Image (cartoon, rainbow, N blue to C red):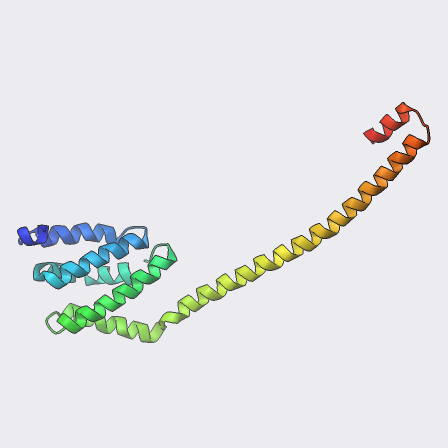
Amino acid sequence: DIVRTNPSFGPQVAADALRSHLQAGHAQERLSALLVCDVLFTRSKAFRQYLLRDIDFLISSTTGRRHELPLPPPARFARKLKDTALRLFEEWHKALGAKHAPLALAAKYLSQEACETGPPAEEDAIAAVAEMQRREVADAWKKANRTAALALGEMRRNAEEMKAGLALLKEGGGGDEDFALALEV
């Protein structure tokens, strides 16, 4: 509503407010801000022009294309943010790209990046590392169980031997003092 009622500074205020949310340390907050940007971008020419002045920031904060500015956790929302951003940039380009040179350049850049890096490579690497860690934990768990089972068996044998030894002491008639000494040792 602020964009519509104050056309002179409303788009700037809205874009600045959304910019702070696009810098958030949580991917879900960035995703929400991007969805609001989409609504305003498609409805307000003034907002669109203001947002396109700093399209590089919008690209880096929503797609993680710069290594020094990765997307924040959680990974589930980071993937959704990236996918949504790429889809929106493509939609915006199809609808308005001819009228806005920065948007056309951004869409071209993102499509070239996607071809060069290939989206699954990073996700496949993450999945492979996660699977390797899962297997290591499972193997360590199995080894610990085997070791515990062996130790438990040995502990039971020692306990039985101790019971037998104490029973012999008790039956052997060696007085209460000998029995007390055996228990202390």
